[in-house]
Length: 400
Image (cartoon, rainbow, N blue to C red):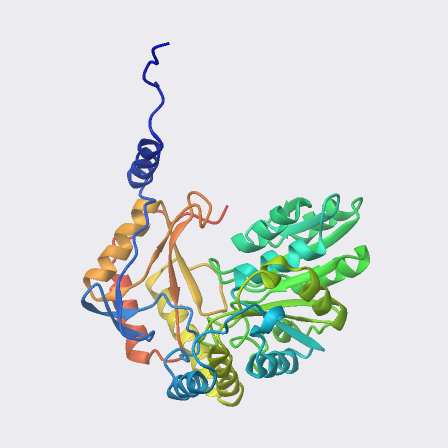
């Protein structure tokens, strides 16, 4: 029998149409080519730029001591770990870093993961399963939401930071996990952790906090959002943190009780079935952790820059979201407006990325301005002067 040509477009055509739709909606994303190390001043696409879009909050990614530790570690351990932690990839450097992170976080044990995304997938899917309920803040990071989906548990997303709504939702439900970011990565605001801890305690649920953007930055000793609120392991038994932001290296960890860590070693698929990070990287992170703990001036300077920027933005009438952290979002509303602002700043040699849906809800596209301890007062003032020249949207949309 003669076959007729299919009326359906080819798979390649479907993908091309999808990409064209993203371009038409100003949602298409392009990578930039960076020359040189991560630091405020860098080469981007062949041009010198002053960057305000890095998570290197303490300025440790290019620190000489951290670089030296990485190089020394490579000479001692080689480049790759060669295997998963449970085969023969777990080195003494990994063990030393886990012990240091446990002590830093004030918990019995810590466990290294390759990335924060893998940590969140592994933790949630190991602790929750079918018929369990997982409650998550609506603005949680994608990895936290994906962890609940991977677990096949019943996921309930409560309105952002709305503990009263959570309390109503959880009243008649046997909750297994309450999961939240400590600092919300696109908004820069803090989760209401004391209230969440009380709800978790009353309902018998685990409370898990992803403090990727709080550790190293918040609290007198840089122990993050929990230290900021005066909370300990009893109130927040599961703490996840990343190492590629304030600590300037790469990877992630979870810290908690002995039983939790042993359960994850036995059951977290994203830990079991992946190659361990290089031991040299653990050596570099040990060095960056030590610097972050002893050089309090980095957090103090960062707080100074946050205050300087917010004060200057208020004088200009900029509608910044309320954030006490290095993440300072300037709402644009439409993706088109955010891209236009970003392009205008780029023309003045300032790199500030436009954040658009689906990373943030529709109608809340923004410039996500991030500050580092290694910025200078002149850098902050230069950014403010450039923001003053932006063709601001009218009116700036409010948070939904």
